[in-house]
Structure formats: structure tokens, C-alpha cells
Image 1 (cartoon, rainbow, N blue to C red):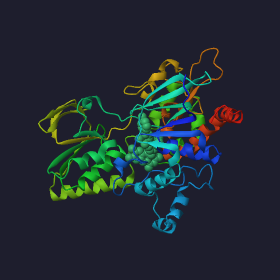
Image 2: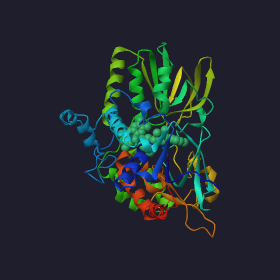
Image 3: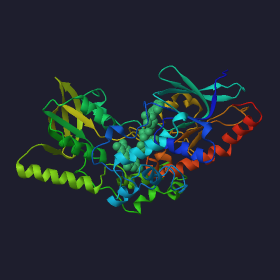
Image 4: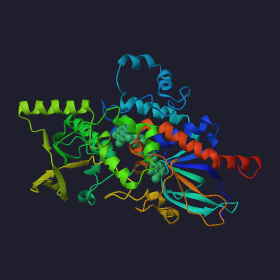
Length: 444
Ligand SMILES: Cc1cc2nc3c(=O)[nH]c(=O)nc-3n(C[C@H](O)[C@H](O)[C@H](O)COP(=O)(O)OP(=O)(O)OC[C@H]3O[C@@H](n4cnc5c(N)ncnc54)[C@H](O)[C@@H]3O)c2cc1C
């Protein structure tokens, strides 16, 4: 039994997803009910890919609050105005703001919630313990030996990087995922000449290739991908309906098989596809190299890496043509894995659930595929003993693509509506109970 503070809502991770939840709770005068733990030493958004010229890929007005409450003090417009840059921004007439500008907006909002966040603490375990009142509460353990207690937990950690099997034993300073791009490439210093292999055909892959080509120490960039090349993202407003709340209502009740079919069908809205502007920039650069006889950029389409082993300072890769099954060897100084993120589900390479849930795995209700059942309000109701007064819930904030559809793949456009759904659900029972406890003087 423990006498520590029990937070009504304990958030793990303080990226845009849980930040948006903090905004939604404050709007309901319930800011004090939530506390967050964040691994980074300060707020950051995609810091490792804050590349020069990169822009965001959603309407900036579908921000942390605007779709729910246009009068919120935490909208992108309010941020621009607070910086005295509203006119400058509007004058640009840009379709999408630079990633750097949007990161500035998110950081500005996060600053307002600083008191509710413990930065520099990484959650390493989640379990259930007995609270002072005898009921069960969640216990989150941190990497520095600390612990936090919560009546419910909102897991907003983002997904784990996907590392293809061939690279699983070679990840290190010279073989790294795109989520470690800037710090890793900068750590290598300006020692020329580097031959860098970029694996993948995603938006991240093409942005990283463009960034590498602007670095003088990079002698050659080799782009390895299984497809024919960089394909256009499906930006039709009809396909992009996946980013509307109505789509979540339509998708959530479907069977797993139908969800899988629909996700496959809509893949190019978000995966292995790129924006027109970066495709144009890369195709232009490639033509320039061809005209000048330069081999600075090499394309290896229809290829996958089947073996990666260290060879001296570098890496020796064996590539296989996915159609002809012919193999070739390629030596690299550095390999960047722009290979995306692991989904939660039962497909090959998926994780059945977030690794943090391992400690409560025995209490997770599973569906026919062995994957936890996530309700429309983004919560998993844990299996409880028969005499339990009320069921325990853990919320998955931004981790529900398999159950809720493409809009949940961390898309910024869905943040505020998802935060509304979660805050509504919390308010329905958990926070109401908390208020009763506070009124009766039995809770802080
Ligand atoms: C380069 C890049 C650009 C993108 N651009 C866009 C875009 O323009 N538009 C769009 O809609 N989507 C975009 N996305 C998708 C992206 O998922 C969202 O932008 C957004 O970051 C999702 O927010 P999140 O809070 O769910 O996850 P994250 O942003 O990943 O935040 C999760 C936070 O949790 C912390 N954390 C993780 N594990 C732990 C732990 N165990 N303990 C404590 N803290 C932890 C992390 O440090 C991080 O701060 C982009 C993704 C990438 C990789």
C-alpha cells in the first residue's frame, strides 16, 4: 500500500498528443488533474528532422485547439500574433508553414504547461499497485528509479522506430534510424568523403537525401528502396477524409479483416509516399547530376537490403532485386534507415501492444488476433477482479492506427478532436470521482 500522491491522470510522453490533452483539460478547468513525464530534457518536436526547408503536412489551423475551440489561447494564430509575426506569415502565402515554425508554436504552448511536466524522465515500466484507499492504481517506474502513481494513464509516447531485420544487429553510430538523423550525422563531423545509403521511399527518406546532398562531406548518396521510386502522396480531399472524426466513427466498429483491407487501400495517404515539392527538388537535382556526369546520387529501385555487416569502419550491404532476385554488394560509410515506425497489431513486424504495457499484459482484454481491445474513446478497460469497485482504464493517445484508422498515425490534424474524446471520457467517470474525493477531503 502506498501513500504517495496519486495523480488522477498520469501522462507518459509529452509530445503533441499529450500536450493537446493538457490543453483540453485546462479548457475544462481540470489542468491540475494531469501530470506528465517526458523523456527529453525539454519540449521538442521531431528535433532530429528539423531540416532546413522542411514544411509540415497538414493544415496549420487544425492545431492543438482550433477545431474544438477557435477562441483558445493556444491556437497557431495566437502564437503567430504573440510573436508579432502574423502579418509576415500571412504575407508569405505559404500553403504549409515550415516545420521549424510549427515546432516553435508547439514549444510555445508547452511552455505554458511547464509546471505539469517532469522533463528528463523516461518511463520504463507500468504496473498496478494498491493505493491508500485499498483500490488499485497505476505505477509508472522511471529510468532513474523514480515512481509515479496514477488513477489512469495516457500513453502518448509515439510509436517505436521500425528497424528492418537485416539491420537489427548493426544499429549504432554509423547505422541509425531517421529519428536519430541530425545528431548522428553531425556527430560524424566533417570528415570527407562519406558514402551514405538511405533506405526507404518515405517523406523522411527524400527529405534526408536532400539534406545529405547539401553537405559537402557527403561524396555520394545511395537511395535504396523496394519500389520503383519516390511516389506521390495521395492528397485528394476524398482520400484525406481519413483525417476526419467521422472516418474514425466509420472505421472503429469494423472487423479486423476489413480494417486491414481499408488501411492497405489507403496506404499512400501517409506511407511510402512523398509531397510533390520534395519530389520535384530531388528530380531536378538528379537531372543536374546526370548533365554534369556526377555520380553523387545513385538510385537503387526495386532493391532491399538482405544482409548488413560491419567491414572496417563502414558497412557492407547485400542488396537483392525484389523481382529478379539477383544480388549485389554495396559498401557504405553510413546507413540511414528511413523505414518508418512499428504499428500495433498482428501483421508481420507489428508490436501487439506498446512495450510499456508489458507489466499489465495479463490484465489486457485481447481480440481474436491477440491485440488489446481499444474502445472508441481510445481507452483499454483492464480485466478486473469481480469485487473491483470500478474498472481501470489506460488511454492510448496517438497509438491507435490499427483500431481507429489512418488519422491516428500521429497526425497533427486529429490531435484536438482526439484530445476532446479522451477528455470527455475522463470527465465522464474518473475526474468526477476525483472531484467527489476532493470534496470529501480524502484526496489532494
Ligand atoms: C519528421 C516527422 C515529421 C512529421 N510531420 C508531420 C506533419 O507535418 N503533420 C502531421 O500530421 N504529422 C507529422 N508527423 C507525424 C507525427 O507523428 C506527429 O507530428 C506528432 O509528432 C505525433 O505526436 P505524438 O505526441 O503522438 O508523438 P511524438 O511526437 O513522438 O511524441 C512522443 C513523446 O513521448 C516521449 N517519450 C517516448 N517514450 C517515452 C517514455 N518511455 N517515457 C517518457 N517519455 C517518452 C518522446 O520523447 C516524445 O517527446 C511527422 C513525423 C515525423 C517523424
